[in-house]
Length: 209
Ligand SMILES: [Zn+2]
Image 1 (tube, rainbow, N blue to C red):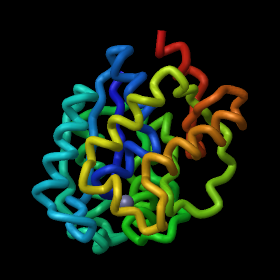
Image 2 (cartoon, rainbow, N blue to C red; image 1 turned 180 degrees about the vertical axis):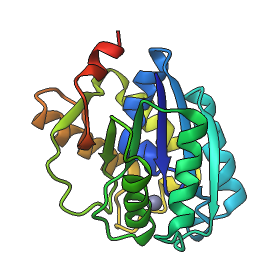
Image 3 (cartoon, rainbow, N blue to C red; image 1 turned 120 degrees about the vertical axis):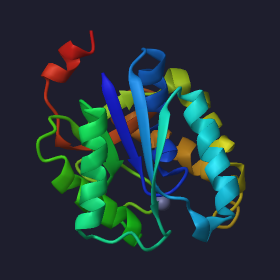
């Protein structure tokens, strides 16, 4: 299977679907990562770029960049066109993208642009990040119990971001672990990642075999 995971900034997709991507990579599915900005508002962009490249290496993923300016991703045709061009190039069967209700405009605009760009794709899942709002219905789950430490390792690879949290005394690692525990409980396992489906076909599960 060809997977495309879209991230607004370096480390978003690791938070939302890092464990799932790790499991898919382990099962020899092809992982493609499209990061739309270099996250230059949250740190040195060269460092952040390198951190993202290391994550791609761990996931044996191909890494592509959107090259939009951080905080300025427009909800315009150029964003839709860019995502469409990667869909055309990579022919993904499954796409992960951030949830559309979010306090960050880049996340909202990328999510909305993805909805248009993926109109003929059969499997599209929204993932959550710390700025997601009303992430609901969180009804599709992946058990990431066996790979929770791998997910945290992906987040740790973004060294510049681990302690740059905006909430006092709370690192992104603790937040990610707590979220995974809560989603795990909802799915009756210890740790899970949750998704809101835009479109999910059950054929997908047969294709996995
Ligand atoms: Zn972000």
